[in-house]
Length: 112
Image (cartoon, rainbow, N blue to C red):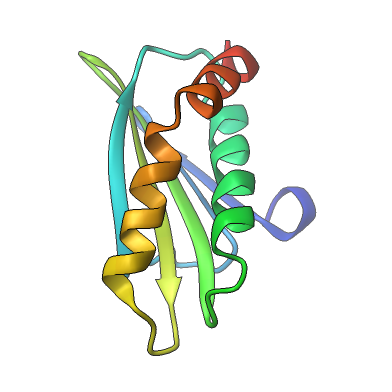
């Protein structure tokens, strides 16, 4: 367990940040970003915004995967969902979060 109770696991070009281990993506949405140097910083920033957006979702525990690909950086945000919840609405909220231009710009500044 790493910083402040978060599990951080790096393997190859991928990094997973999760509150509980093993990480589970019961719901998730992916986006692509330009290449970043600091995957862990990007993962923490996405995780913070994800938690703020879905903190009222009962039984939710966020997970973020950041992976270097040949075309840039793949970000998969979502997490474990232990309660019955409107999954489609939660995934729509995650997609909106990941495509927000202001957040994306902030994440990229922070991870550069």
